[in-house]
Length: 264
Image (cartoon, rainbow, N blue to C red; front, side, top):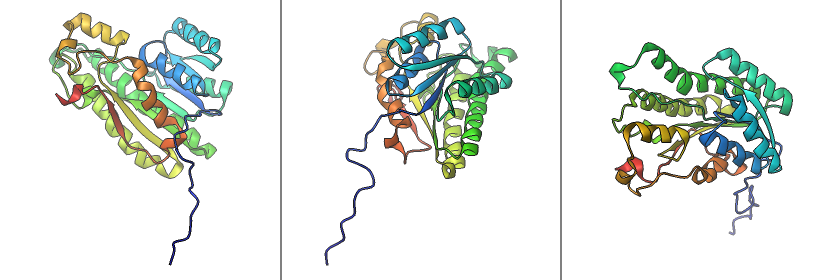
């Protein structure tokens, strides 16, 4: 006996990147990957809250997005300050509506050997790379749950969370490993509410932070498998996939985008 024909639930191919009617918050958006992520989300139709401490840079980024036909609102945010987190989310939602996409991008390197780090630096690295993203994810999830809305959270980790090269960034590696586990645990915690939590673990990409690292330890690109740094544009497709309708079933995943660097 023939099986009954069942219409597909999703159209083929299920690869929509349309972010119309979505509101995104990107931290660390004044430069580097965060700035690129903000422009990428805006180009896909999202209204974007661009957040960072450097307000002059935010104004520049906001203008770039508006000039390209997108919508962006700059908001001052210090992820190490819980009050600043709450105020920034409130300001952003007042301007654009409930945040449905969070990109936890803000981060700092330690640039010190573990036994030489001051307590002040230890606290700053942990607060920026782990505590702040955790508090922000909880703040966004709390509001989504209250509004009975689904959402997407993308945490920016690092290939250094899997492969520590021993170049004076031990605490950075540790905090990014914590981000990976946070991603997995919160995905389970909030799955029932339709909130997907994933992470991207980039390798060495061309950013201001990477420029500082090269200045500190020298040019290491000849030792990389493809002897190059990645271009931030090469992260666009992964970011869009994790926040777009087509990845509705993907949660608790850490996607490595490292050009083979973490497999040496």
